[in-house]
Length: 219
Image 1 (cartoon, rainbow, N blue to C red):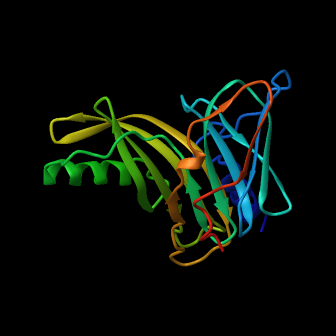
Image 2 (cartoon, helix red, strand yellow):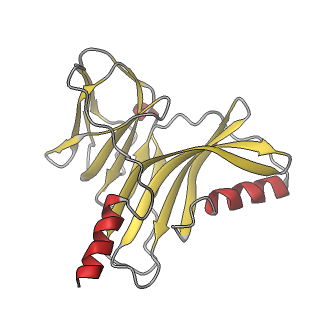
């Protein structure tokens, strides 16, 4: 039992999956913030990702549907909201639509992303785009291998550079990781891009977004 508990603790803390810290601590010297709410459903997590992917702030969840970020430095942020009913709403700025790729290049792109983290056995690309020849992608990964005391779910953004028909991952930023009860073949999060969550400029005050449009389908 002690060994199982230790493994579960490592999974939850991210020790098995990498020692990097995902979330950024609030800056006591910063007076900026963001508030908003879903029109329906229940939030479990709200994240603010800065434009350089350097910082990922977590919001306080109030009254199940409202989120509040405080002590956020001046900058532009994209929000990612995860609901209790396994939905993800996001405004990540991933660039324009992908151009038409040769079949081999597209296959290699999907394979490169799928195999980028061997700790996870399943993955899905929720959305991708291109900026100045770089592909940016939002990827969800799940580890549900038999014998582990918990499943692990992770969201990350990746940057890839093309080399002929192959690809090189030049940057990865984990933005969410959570241990979940063991479940065989858990479903991936239902995904929606919500423009109202993109490019939110924060200065030295509280930015009030109100109810987020475009997310009324949240249950």
